Figure (cartoon, rainbow, N blue to C red):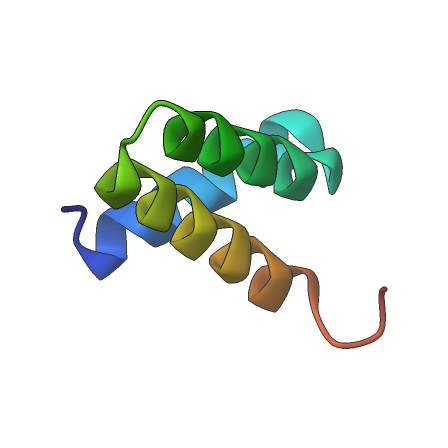
Length: 61
């Protein structure tokens, strides 16, 4: 399992590379992992998506 620092590092890198579409990409990865029965990986992708939502700030939906 990723540390909190790793989660935020990946989230920041994805936002820099993909903009706010990165949140959708992380959600897609979570769904793909879940469909393969990879529950731990799916939870990590959801954690990354949540971190990105926090990083983007409260004024954007």
